[in-house]
Length: 202
Image: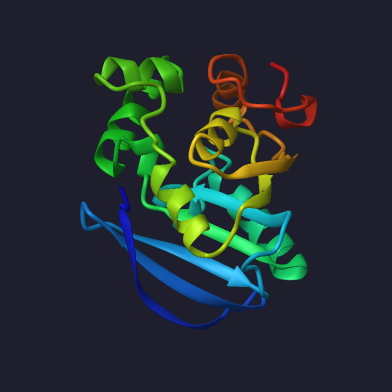
């Protein structure tokens, strides 16, 4: 069942990452998701792709509590130079929403890690679904992609809907004093694929 409809397309020049074509998709729930496309990707193999879940605090406010904003910037720089697709999905806080993410921050301030905090609020450690992302990439004419990610669940989620991941390209962000525990938890409890550069030893 098709869950998305393309609603608008326009030229989209950016200050730091070059010029893209922006596509806005609407899903059945009414959310709007964005695909930034650099170059001719339709029908091409091994297209460079970043599937990025919304993080208002990291992407917009440059929070030091997560690595999301820095991953977004690295991905946009790479795609801006090499061509590909940057997909921005409205799945704030691993799918629990902004309000619950801030509630989870409060629990983390009290000593819980990011997984424990989500579970305390009654959620799974990760509530995201990549069905919509896979359908958008398919609508753009992609079948085989090189995926910028550290998250094996993202690879599995996209491949479950017919996309072939020909290569995983890591996005390693050096931890700071605010993210050391967060990144360690993502590696140990969520299975994120990080080398030691992504973890600060206590």
